[in-house]
Structures are given as structure tokens and as C-alpha cells.
Length: 71
Image 1 (cartoon, helix red, strand yellow):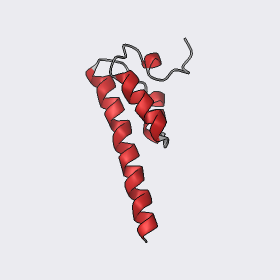
Image 2 (image 1 turned 60 degrees about the vertical axis):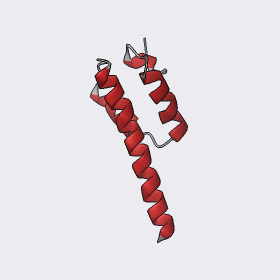
Image 3 (image 1 turned 120 degrees about the vertical axis):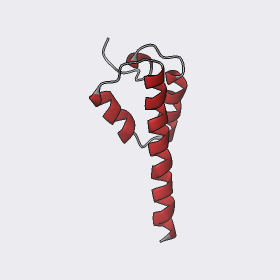
């Protein structure tokens, strides 16, 4: 039962981090389409979310954050 609780807490922390990335993008006026929104919210890699967070702080476009988007 404890493993399940730990897993749930970890997933919750990842979800919160993803939501913070989206809030930063919104606050900066960066348009975020539904596909990108879902991609951010479904990310389960903490390092990726940290990288997106750092990039979102100075982003002017979604491509500044999600580096593999087409130009």
C-alpha cells in the first residue's frame, strides 16, 4: 500500500509541475494549443518538465519551450 501511495504522490507532483509550466506560458502570453497542452500535462519525466519550466520563464513562443516543434 505504501508503494502505491508513493507512486500517487509522485504523479501528483509531476502534474503540479506541468500545470506550473502552463501557467507561466499563459502569464507570458504564449499561445498554447490543445495538443501542446496535453503533451505538457501528460509528461511523466521530471527532467523534461524541469527543462520546460526553465525555458517557459523566458519563452516568447511555444517552440521556445517544446524544442522539437516544427518551425
